[in-house]
Every structure is written in structure tokens, then in C-alpha cells.
Length: 283
Picture: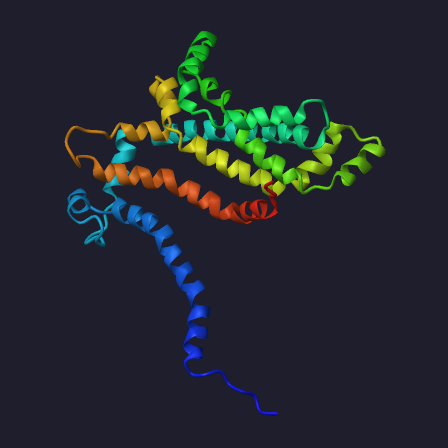
């Protein structure tokens, strides 16, 4: 039986329909990767070339910006302080957010939905409104110029609780009830059953929290006045100058040093990040 081939005019349309997703993906990749290429390219250019032709390839590669950063700043100390803050906030926030999400999602108690609704409502309040009360509280506690002023207020995130709570809705209640019938306590269920199942969501929360605390500039600038406690973000401010472009090499070099750890960390954990959002149910 002879088959009827599609008209010649339909073939280009079919090919274009197959190529269109790849074209869009390539364009999206260019949009995403261009800022990183631009950053790396300018970090190895001479200062004059950065100012006059920032989009052009470097005529000569120089690492003087990186060497000047290490000469003018104690970069290892800044990186250590940033890591202490980022890791402490990430661990504490991930654990407490997971506990809060588990209580709201899987432990029935009176007023649970009302409490969760109130928590979501607080997300609509601009954070700047809490700036002065929080600073006054930290000052009265004697935590100004201490890491506690940054770690404790960031220990819980309503958004992270919301995200983990939505992920917990994908875990059947019957599985937890079976563990309760076997005599397991809520803490035992949380550590032995829930946490292993929440690994993708916990990884996502850890990535977002780490990135947010690593990139935080205003918090360390406000609370940390001792140069020995400054982070890399505050260290970047030291290259500010009244002369335009005076420290442009150092700025691009330090920006690259700040950004690359986040990019590497994300690409290592991206599978868990995607898996979490693939399983989250929003309702």
C-alpha cells in the first residue's frame, strides 16, 4: 500500500518546529552565560582596556587585578568570615525550616492552618520595616559587631518553610502513620523517614540560603564594624574611589572570586535542585 508523503511546503515547517526548541535553548544559554564570560574576560584585562572596550576580547591577559586584591586586602580572612556566616546560617536555617515545615505539614494540632496563613502573610511585609527594630534588639543584646547579629535573625525563613511544607505534601501520610503504629515518635519519624525523603528539597533550601547569605552586603555592613569581621562583600567596598575607574581591575577580579564558588556549588548540586521543584505541589 503506497504511503502519501506530506507536501513539500509542510516539510520546512516540520523541521522548523523541531529546531525551534533548540534555538530557544541556545539563545537562553547565551543570555545566561554571557554575564559570566563578560566577568571573566574583564577580570584579566588591563584597567584602561576595561574602560574603553569592555565588550571586546582582551588584547593581553594580565592577572594584576588578582595580585592587587591580595596585596591590599586580607582575602583569606574575608573568605573565612563569609564562609563562617554562610555555613552557619545555611545549616541552622535548613534544620529549623525543616522542623517547622514538618510540624505544619504532618503534625495535626489546633490552629495549624491559621498559623501557617499568618506566616505567609508576613512575607508580604517589606523587610526594611524590620530594620530599625531588629538593630535596636541586636544592640540591646550586645550582638552588634558579632556574627550572632547576622546568624540568629536568619535562622528561620518563612519562604523555606513554605517550600519544604509543599514538598512534604508529596509524602503519603500513611507511611508516617505506619511508623507511629510501630511506636516511633515524631522526632524519630522526622530523622529516620522524613529527612532522607526530603533530601532534594533540603538541598534546594541549602543552595538558596547559602547564596543569599554569601551575597549579603547590607547586613555585614550594618552590624560588623571591626575590619577583622568583614566579609568579601564588604571588602569589595574598599575599592570604592572618587576617581572613576581607578580600581576597576581589582573590582572585577574580586567579583570573579566572589561569584565562582557559587557557580561551582550550584552546578554540583543542580540535580537535587531540579528534583525538588519537580516534586513540589503548589496548591
